[in-house]
Length: 452
Image 1 (cartoon, one colour):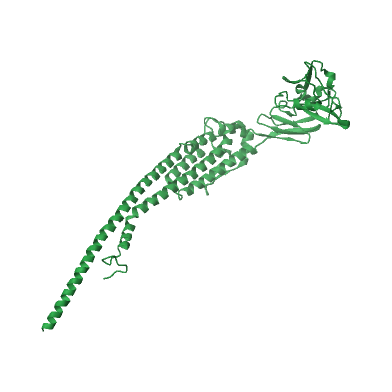
Image 2 (cartoon, helix red, strand yellow):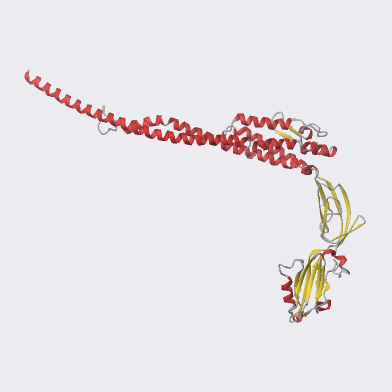
């Protein structure tokens, strides 16, 4: 019987037969590739899980910080006069603040002189600028114009903080202006002279004016001046941090306004709300990662440990032993974690220290324990990394086994081709013999028919 794709001698479709045999031989390789794909999916799913755990751990940062539950908020009745900010050390209260004058950087202006006028030129002539304990001496042994003096002062090596400006007025006249780099009386510009140069050489005068554009009467008025509930306050800076504990006043202009401080529960409720959101997101992730390749046993174990901390009690931390007492509960129908901010707000008013201890105690606080648990799972070299390393080791073994199988398949294919080649030759010989015998029998039949 002839085949549709005859071979060289036998009529057999040797290539087709070998191809079909090799499909069966390649089944182990296909299974190996499938296992590798499944393992790669596991590695990817564990990476997603680690990201989810890290997100939950990030939500723990604020809960571990006692300052989250001690936050305050502050307000200025008129921000054009001053703005305010407060920290955890501020106590709720209000203050009447009158800003009499702002702190100013000291300014000195020279006499107005011709742009070509020079100063100094004698041996030992000099001008020294001093601010607080920092000084800079300008050598005037070579005479200089005001423009040259300005350039000589505004060099990087001048560590006094004083900068020099130059005003060009009418008639080609100029005025040199010296400005301190900081505000207040203690950082005023102090001048000293050498050689033939003296105070009359430049005749510097203070240029500072108050809010009404009236010249300050003395350098002492360079400091900020305030009256807070009848108490006089002077400071060298317009940012005042040491008058009311925990409160910073940033004064902007003269006038009167009220500064108020109150407790800020929003910081704590936001932190707990963020935790609940992150926890629910992780639970959702745990429910789906099993389908993505992660071990369901590992996922169940992680969820069980997290739930253990969430529902577990804490002793010796004050009035509260369970997070449910602070508004974090589990919905019996949906299984979702929920948060009632009003419960936490009430607890913070009634027992603020107990709330802080429950969440932030460095040994047994809720957030500290949960953060520690997540750290063992998500940290570099932790539980999940160990699982991933095992999976990556299997990937390496798959690569080695694939190379072995591919070499074996190549040898098997060559063996099949060789064996079927031999079979093809044998069948070709048998076909030739069959044809010869057929011809002999046909001849014999002819002879017998003729002899009848």
